[in-house]
Length: 508
Image (cartoon, rainbow, N blue to C red; front, side):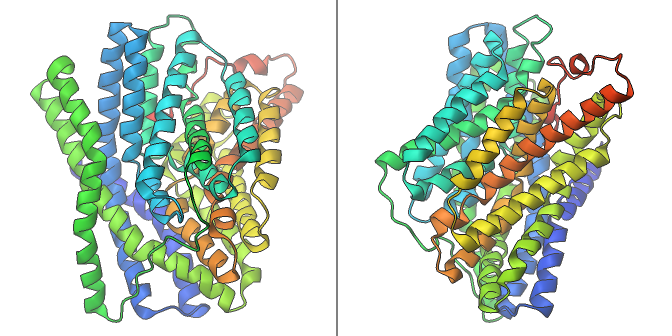
């Protein structure tokens, strides 16, 4: 595939991801909810920047971060030294998470917690649980028992934690499994799994996304015991522009800030790779140049993405949410959020790959359409529940505890492959649109309604990450039962056993 063809493909994916939300918002602003003309124009410009930025970023991630993970994972594997693998996994987990764009957006929008402190805390959590993931692969520990143990610890801490940290902690687990982190850590997992020669080694490389989502939750909950915070109304800087010149100036003024911010975010992983290249990898000129060019694409993409998000996209989401409350359209919030959730998940490129692989794994018994509808229902319900929380002020624990009890209970009875699919699907479902638009939208509604942003608006990403755990496992259980009824002589549990793998690391 030529570079031009690849760019065209990624642009089409980015358009499909952003355009449905942009169209819904445009209809609302043009016909129902009046907003400032400058802000609406900034939103349109931001939409364009996000589309271009996402296209460049995904190309760059594919060319650089996935390849870096593959090369480092393969070289560490050859040493067969567990302590070295664990040490580098911890360092790389921190370095790659710092550069995750969804985490940057969440940290910037979180009131009451210093942005850098939150990013570092979440990154350390990912690093620690990447170590746990490597130990699981090395010793062949069943995924479901680790999930049961660590989620039990999570909810014990949640019961006594600062309420201002609770929703942010669960959201942190959702945003870290993004387009930067997932391909990188999965590539490391595949390399480490190759140390073992048994038949289940490859399947044990699966589940890294699920475990690495737990690390940030625990880390932020622990931070809540030692870090002072106050409930803030909103940390979101809303940009308002009087005319087109002010709009252009606003974007031009923001770009240098994000050039420096993204450089600092990417620098640790890039320097680490260069040192690894000099002392160990010693790649030839062509593959090395390809990775360097990929880092350049990633850098440009992140700058454009974050500029578009923070100047235009998130600002309108926040203002629109507040304006709907002012216009007495609160009754529309829940169905509107569910509609947006339905389209958000359909537009995620990683989800389309997941749907196709599930269809292939089940020999067509579970079609791409069925899997797609299952995830769409999950995210629509998650968005609806998030708006219920914003409007009513109910604690997120009233939703998360029953949800995870059901999800973990299902993991004990459904075929293991469906558990793995479900928990990793929860990670890929919380894509860029959730953190960049839906969360600011919920913050705007909450602020205008007089609620607490930290406790009521945050938690939206967590619900998006949770609902697929339930719906996908239920769908899997129903599908296996239907097949057993149709062909009782076949052993469907073994057909969906641990030695089957959904390779999400193929998605950049």
